[in-house]
Image 1 (tube, helix red, strand yellow):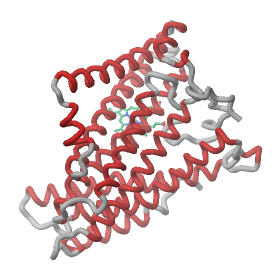
Image 2 (spheres, protein in one colour):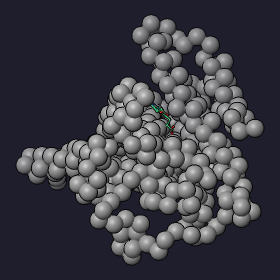
Image 3 (cartoon, protein in one colour):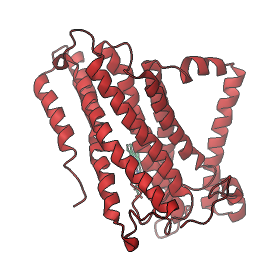
Image 4 (cartoon, protein in one colour):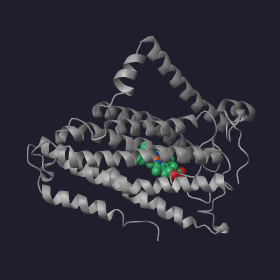
Length: 349
Ligand code: HEM
């Protein structure tokens, strides 16, 4: 079981603030962490000052944050994805630099810090860059293509965006206080269990991923229902642009594959803090259950990301070459087959 947590700060304490840690340790690794935390705090402050000086708080709240318009929600998803992309890209540069200078040497990062970097980089690229980007794109384009006024559930759409934004905020907070998980983007136990990772890092990972996976489930339901129910008169399924077909297959994959991930992270949380033993072999659990749940999500995830991109290429190329899409019907069937087959491909034996 975990050590008893502080009633207000949980597993965190004052020494977990990266600036305090850098002051105490004085290592290059802690200095890099403090610099990254400093950039995050400075960015936040600059944004608050800009909003105040320009008087943008009210329009931001009225026209954007509380908007249920699918186009605005789509744009906000894409902005979130680009902000997170900037961070993950910066982390990639730091990792590559460390790898370049650390030949036969420790380099400027500790092993633990490098572990945090590839874990945040991988988790952000998949869950907070690629997924929000395509969710934003579908949000913006799909209702227009099928002639719908909005999503079937506009409020749920806004809530979904809020869930992923909250997950991203958690990942950003870990830059300033506490440490992130070193368990990689897949978070396999037993390494991420309480015995090997007693700190708050894995909990940051668990909650960030849980929030965004719930978002993706709700978004999948929203997209699928919109595509089934909100098409304009005359827009039969087989007349839909191919991008809408890929969006439909992606949304069905989202509904069925994000739930196992949500379950896996919640079970890991129960293992870590409430003495459950879903994944602890010594107490009768089985860590392969985690691997199976994770890859029930992990492989369809690849197709969740690539199918809408296929749809974009098909539409852009046929539109700009002013020709009807060649083999439309077979492409639709192929996309549906890919969606079904994606569940049968698993790296777990
Ligand atoms: C400029 C582009 C990029 C560079 C230089 C880069 C670099 C890296 C490096 C150095 C690692 C760690 C390797 C290791 O030591 O284990 C890594 C891991 C990873 N990257 Fe990237 N990356 C880039 C773009 C991307 C993109 C676009 C994605 C996904 C959309 C991505 C997803 C991942 C994932 C999932 C991991 C594995 C993380 C883990 O082990 O948990 N990367 N990348």
